[in-house]
Length: 637
Image (cartoon, rainbow, N blue to C red; front, side):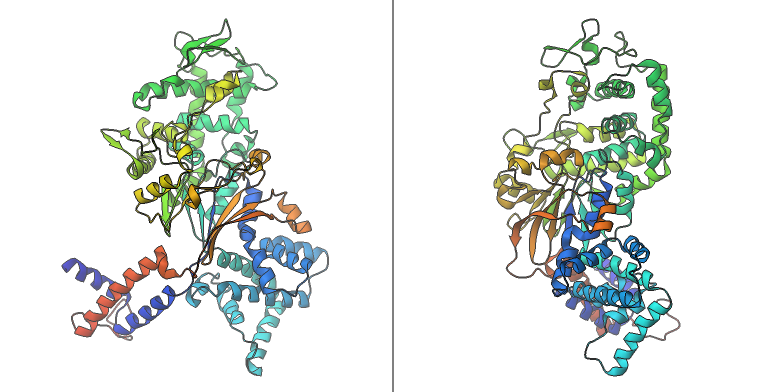
C-alpha cells in the first residue's frame, strides 16, 4: 500500500490537481474507443534498398488505395501523379519544375489535395496524436489547413485562402508539400514490424538501416543474418569472415568498403599472392572460405556442447587424392586442391598472414562508426521475439523435437525449451554486447547457423557448398518445426507457450521464402501461422515468383499482400511505375471494427486510467494536496 501511495505521489507531479486528472481521464476514455492504428509486417529485406524504400514510401500500396477512395473523380493519370508525388516529393517537384509544370495553381491544387488526404487518414486518430505526427516547424499551419470547413463563414474561408496564398508567396510551398507527404505516410502506417534479415545478399543493407533508423515507429525481431553482423561488430572473427564470404558470394563486397569503410585491400593482396583464380571460385573466395572453415573448427572444439563435430572436416582432407571424407563416412571429390595455407599436421591453425588478415578485419568491423550506430539500433529496437496485439512475431522457429514437442536444450547447467530457450538466447545476445568474450561471441555465430538456433533452425553446409562438387552433400537438415508448423495444433501450442490466446492470435514468421511459383501458400496451420518472407531479395525472385509480402493488420482486417518485382526509383519517378499487388490474401475479416481498447496500447491506457482514478480519490478525499495553476511554489506546474 505504501508503494502504491508513493507511486501516486510521483504521478501527482504530472497531474498536480483534480482538473488535470479530469482532462486526462476524459481524453484516455475517448482514445480507447477509437479504431486501432494500422500495423505493417515485413521480413527478409536482405539489402534490397530501392524496393524496400518504395514499399516504405507507398506504404505497401495503401497510399494508392486511399487516393482512389478520396479522389474518385480524378483520372487514372492524375491519381498516379499524386501517388508518385507522395512517394518522392522532393524528386518529383524538381522534375516538374524542369518541365515547367509548377505554378501557383499547381501548388494550390496539390496542397488542397494533400490536406484532404491527410484529413481522411487522420480520422482514426485523436487530434493530439495527429498534431504530434506533424513536424513542429509546420504543425500550426498544417493543423489550421486541416480544420478548414467548406461551410465556414466568409471571413474564416478568407483566412484559409490567405494561408495558401502566403505559403506560395513566401516560396515555402515545396517545404509544406514535402512535410504533408511525409505526414500522410506516417498516418497510413501507425507501426512497422520488421521480422529480421536486413543484411546480406542485396547491395545496400547500410541504406536500409539508415531508412529504418529514420522511421517514426517500429520494432525489430533479429534474423540470423542480423545477428551475424552484430557478432562481427562485437568482435567475433568468425562472424566477420562469414560476412565476407557472403558478400563475395553475392558480389556486393564493395558495400563493405563504401558503406562501412571496411578495407579489403589486405585480403586482395593476400589472395593474389597465395591462391589462383578459377572461373567459379575466385582467389579471394578461396582465401576467406579456408579461414572460415579453420575458425569454425576452432569454435567447435571450444564448444563440445554445440554437438557440431561433423563440421570438423579439414583433418579429413586428402589433397593428393583431391578428396574429403564427410560425416557419412563416404569419400567425395573436392572442387579444388588449391589450398596452400592448409597444414595437415595442424589443419585448423591460421598462418601468420591469415592471423594478421583476420585481426585487421575484426578491427575494421568493430571500429566502423556507421556499423556501430546500426548495431546499437539493432540492440535498442530488436528482440528474439515480440508479442504484439495478440500476435507472436519471430524470424526463425521455436525448436521442436521429432514428435513435435518443445525441444529441451542444454543451456549451461539448465535444460530449457520453448519460450524459456528464446529468452535465454536473447540474454546471451545482449550480454555479448557487454562482455565480448569467446563464450558470447561464439554463441552469436551459433545463432547464425547452429542446428538448434531459433533464428535459423537448420545446419548450413558451408564447407560442402564451397568445396565439395557432389551437390547431394549440400542438403541442410531442418528442425522438425518446419514440418509441424503446418498443423494448427502445433501453432496453438506455441501461442499458448507465449501466453497468447490461440483462438485470436497468429504466429507471424519470416526466414523461409514462400515458393508461390510452385503453388506454395504463406498461410499455415489453418490460418494460425503466416510466413511473410516472399522474396524481397532479387536472387530468390525467380524461385518465389513474387517480390515480397506485406502483412497488413488494420482495424478491419488482417491481409497478406504479395508484391510484384520493383525496377528502380528512377523509373518510379519518371514514369509512375509502382510495385503492384499480385495477390491479396484475406487471413481474417473482423466482424466489428477493432478498437484501441482491444490492443496492447489499450491495456496500458486502462492501467493508467485505474491509477488516475485512484489519484483522483486521494485528491477528493484530501489525502494528497493539490496544486492549482498559478502556484509559484510548485515547480511542476
